[in-house]
Length: 167
Image 1 (tube, rainbow, N blue to C red):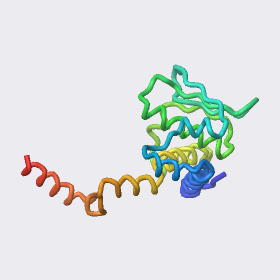
Image 2: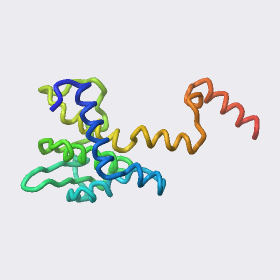
Image 3: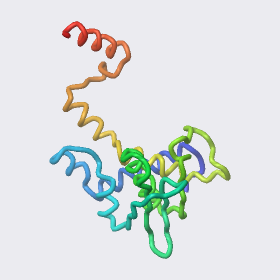
Image 4: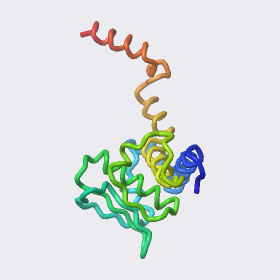
């Protein structure tokens, strides 16, 4: 397990990359398009998933007697997907069981966790890297014809002004 924040982020990111390679996610998306199917990935690794209304929890990872994931249905699909990826991260990195409430959506970068337990940081990094791997961002940017300049603030303002002139 990681002993500091930076190591936790690296560990989670690397674990997400390993799972993408194991599942051949990149090839699938490059041939079929779309985005990362976290629920399909959970199914592909044989991890039981239960989607139910959960009071006070977004999700949970259970390791005994057998691994499994719970995700609430009382949040928008975007939050359900992130929560599922976070719980998949716990599973992939063989973490201790975890009950995750809304704090997983409000964590601040670089904020130390009580007792220097970085499993939640690892699971967050896993979820982010799994849902939005760099190769996917680059593929969608290329498909849209976006260049680095399109992401600079002055270029966005210029592009907006040009769009308005065309109207």
